[in-house]
Image (cartoon, rainbow, N blue to C red; front, side):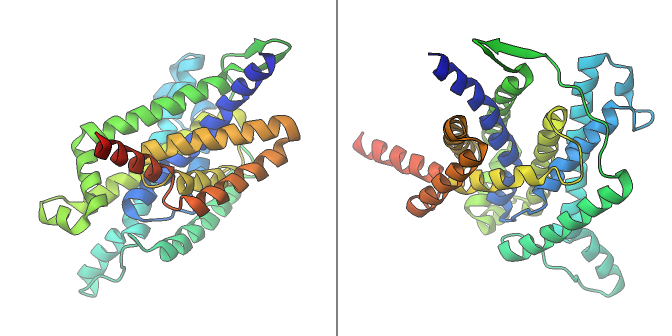
Amino acid sequence: MAVGLDLLVQFFPNFASIVLAATGLAIIFGIMGVINLAHGEFIMVGAFATSLAYNGGIPLLPIDALPGLGRLIGAMLFAALVTALFGLLVERTIISGAIPNWIAERTVGHPVITPLYDRLLDSMVATWGLSLIMVQTFRNYFGNSLSGVPIPFGELSYGNSSIGLYQVLLAGVAALVLVALYLVFVRTDYGMRARATIQNESMAQSLGVNTERTYMTTFALGSGLAGLTGALYAPLLSIEPGLGAAFLVDAFVAVVVGGSSVVVGTLLSGGLLGIVDTLFSNVYGTFAGRIALLIVAIVLIRFIPEGLSSLVERLRERRLEVE
């Protein structure tokens, strides 16, 4: 019983880390066909913005007057908003080229940039270059580290062991994020437009869907979720320019293993990979856990190349045929 409880408690932070890191990347890749290799740096922006906001590094920010926990939550929400706005700027300038093309049309008479939608290799190169620029810029401007953010809530004791209660609560936050995304994609006009764009972009355009605006909103949403991840993990990390790299591998593995469905795929991949990582890390150590996670991912990609969400969809279709 004690071993089972120990594994369960260790599973929560692993699940939260994978799910939170993957959601923003999954949305951008699933809807736009853009592989964002700067995703880790967007997470870094969220962590840096949280630290600056919480520690008074941003003058005239209203959250300075809030008490401890309220101030931390305000700093995290501010960081998610800042990252979403930064993502919007990146999408308008680099991903879609809307701003450079607007300038070019008024100077040379024609657009000069082709959007990176559904251009996987091109988007990888462009965002990889962006990630290098961002890391070095942050290092030059902020130095090698920023002041940390306190960890709230203290520790949770169980048996002879303990774990930070905040780390356990992050699993609940990850679940809430998935529920919120489900509601966004199922119950909102944006969700309807996004699903139509995924299924058939040209048909969606013919029905009046502004797919360019949908892409713009999608990139901002995915960026904001990356910023939220950085904000949530700011209390647990050393806030330095390279912190985003720790999330990037898990995020990509979870997206590939999960498949095209953002909510179902991320939930299944986060749960499965979190279990594998927890089991092997508990028995053989952290390094073995990472290796086991990658091996399981490779096997799943080999036998279920379209991801776990496609397997769920096939099972659902078979059940409907039987009924």
